[in-house]
Image (spheres, rainbow, N blue to C red):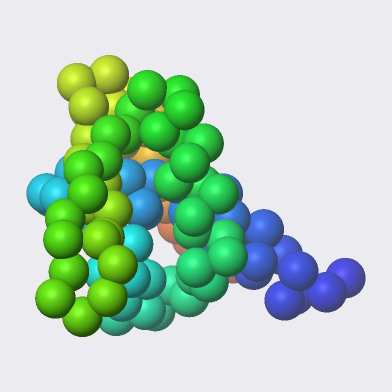
Length: 116
């Protein structure tokens, strides 16, 4: 089994939640999302990010506005809609339940190994 593939799949599973977590903090430009993800040690390429942002916008979870740039073309800044905030709250509940369950299982596994 390929550990890198498993790690990649795990990251993909939380990618949307992480991106929405960044946008929830306030209006953001896509390259800022890439930088914040990189700072958190979660690499994402713009080629992966833009289709995801488009999908979230088409689902009604994000909106954007154009901002003129002094160093090039206008920039698209994303922000969450009310529907997006509700969606995010549900994702957050799901994440907490999943993280708690994984933590419980991994702690049980560690305790069982110590008892053997």
